[in-house]
Image (cartoon, rainbow, N blue to C red):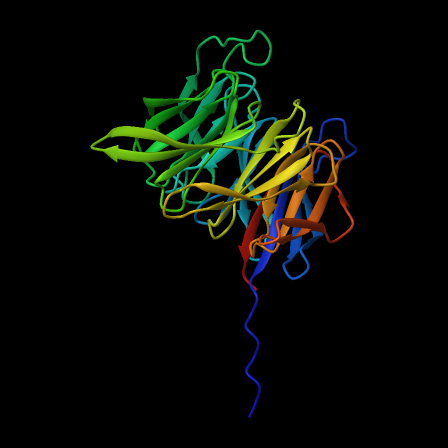
Length: 359
């Protein structure tokens, strides 16, 4: 009897964004083939773009969008994962630090750390970026005359029912929640989630079913978990957990940076500079609560982003200050990260995004 053919393994590429200022080239995006079995990356292409501080893949998986000095840039994702530039658009402000699309891929939202600005732009069916539909300059005065003395928007992301845009204001210690008009692209403030003073909310993610909100705080080194309800346009957020992203014995001066979900929504990953560690939490899908599984060093300086590979068996850390990527095998039951390959050099990496391609 003939042997049954082995199951075809899914194929992925990884997009890595990085800063280019002060470096020898202008390749702000690098594309890697993903070795799922061994938990490693092999570079396959480089894309010229200046200071790609963050990138995102559209929900339809057809297009990639990146921050750049000129504003925002769009690319078509080809069958092999390579990128073809579509166009560039201005955000009418200082360079952004984060961007995302709504779940219909009708609008692109950007966050401005330097000018405290939220920009909404229209997206066309061909993936190109159109006109600005709304601009909001966040206002207020914080309580520390240093990093927190004025608005700094660090993350903008729509929740899973696509009704609201959540905007983390690092400087004002709160997250603004805006309703989205999906015809005009206008935003209207609907609620504010207030964090602890001097906590610095950095990033936000949502559970697979959309019932729970996870907010990472850079200075406080915590994740707050909220239960989300929307009754006839009246939103309500109940805080149900606060959990630390660093170990209790770590002596201060730490800054939490990454917040990524695993492909299957079972795990939430964060990382911290200073401590230079990655932490993996298991998500209880019924209650939304987090349980720490792993918290260990990543063998680099300033892990600006960290993520599990699509099969949850390996982890990558992007080490911004040491200009490296490091790779680890993951044992959730034993709570272990074991370095499994030599580090890969990459200048000032910012974020990683895995993308499934046709095999």
